[in-house]
Amino acid sequence: MELSWMGESRELVRALIYYANMTTRNLSATFAPAHGLELTRCEYQILEYILEFEDETRIMSDISRDLGYVPSVVSKSIGHLIHMGLVEKYRIKGNKKSIVVKPTELGRQIYLELVARDIEPVFRAFIDYIKNLPEGSADRFTEAIRCLCEPWYRFSSSRLEKIEEE
Image (cartoon, rainbow, N blue to C red; front, side, top):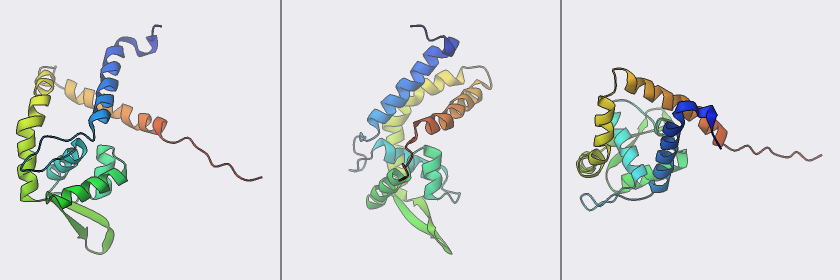
């Protein structure tokens, strides 16, 4: 059956779906230990986010929203990162619900080791390929992926409706 509605984007859509499925499949897999500590891919992504925005006041709900994880996954992962000594929790004065997470020095060390040993080698070919695209293409590709994310999320969310008693 020809899927003509995708036009010449079919292989790109296929590659995006494959990448998303492989990411989901490997989300709970752990990296080889760094400094004797094992992180899941989810914990790694959260640690990376915390490091990227450490100079800003990002709360846990920002992490959930920006990474696309449900809040319970972020909370559980941050609890494990705290237990390992990689991040610390803070509160915004006067707001008990807004939790800010900041990296520790050990968190920075673990992150840098994982990037050098595991992450950079995986992404190097992809980044080199993107660098060779015409100027502005990476930004347009990024926006194309983002315009897919929100509608895809809405489509996949629960469609259950409560049945009211008559």
